[in-house]
Length: 329
Image 1 (cartoon, rainbow, N blue to C red):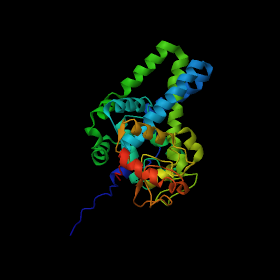
Image 2 (image 1 turned 180 degrees about the vertical axis):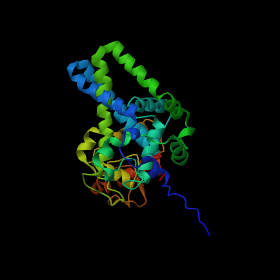
Image 3 (image 1 turned 90 degrees about the vertical axis):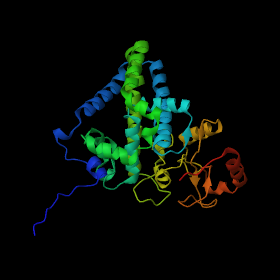
Image 4 (image 1 turned 60 degrees about the vertical axis):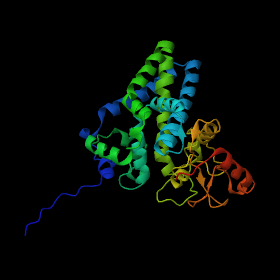
């Protein structure tokens, strides 16, 4: 009896995200050219120096990097670590859009796949496929749009139900064109190169180092199934995102610093928004009682050193009752 042998088809994640053979036809040339031009503009910024340009770059770096990417795209949108009211959510989406890291919902898609397949086949940017692959090369490959549609239905159907998110998904490029025109109109080449090119490139590498360096170097608080690490020097300029092993152990938590000395500026932003009523349903860290952080149950809103937890026992109980923290994991 004759049998029909069908070719092996990998799963969606592996088919879409695994590294292809690098040939000219596999390169997404518009993306590659754009990345190169932005890096050239970043270098050119030093030949058009101005203090106003530097101040603009620092301000926009914090706005787009912290509020936009780490606070917005990552902890709010991808992991649902908290909920924001509509008006602040609009400005958080705007900040993320101006980071020029792609439309917000596709950014969240790639990151959700990363957590589902971390350091395994189908991980969009694992260093197991090479350091440079995890840092930047994964961004410049052509990919199949029909497979993307299937991944959207699988990973982010909830995000397409948010009107603000879908609006920025559809108008992503226009906000950046508007910012570029405004910078050049008011500050010439200095503002454009410092406020756009150099700032965007720095925020890019801030994000890319989390994908690459924090899966290679650093220490581990938790035994996870991947190679995630905590790396202090990455956390210094990524607003607390460098505590990556902590994050992979408890991906839904709105706080990434699990020890008292693991500074988490984005977590501070979450707390400020919670105290001012802008954020609700914050997902807290999980502790076993008040001992060392673990994967087990019992929520606690204070990401602090285990030896200080006994002192804060009463405060934690009062905080949970009065401020309504929730554990949604």
